[in-house]
Length: 125
Image (cartoon, rainbow, N blue to C red; front, side, top):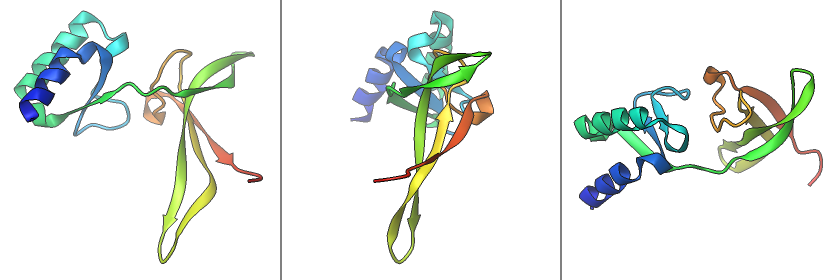
């Protein structure tokens, strides 16, 4: 039921990612595992005031890749956005866009938050 889901979200805010439904690009969101108690309580109040404006999801484990940063290699979290063309047939493009987190331990890979991106190509399959 919605009431059970609502209670679950409020009880598990420190473990979840919560996003404002009308925001994008990594703005208006709470990363529960790295948030302060004050940030969690602020989001709790916002969600209670307007629950339809928020989406909660579990933290997704992102892959890491070596990245050249400030003259040395560092692991950064990445995600892959594949391209799929839908027309009379569905075609999967051999590649996609890999998004890279701005800072070493961040799970936020949005370019508007300073993350980078790289074209990704599949050379053989």
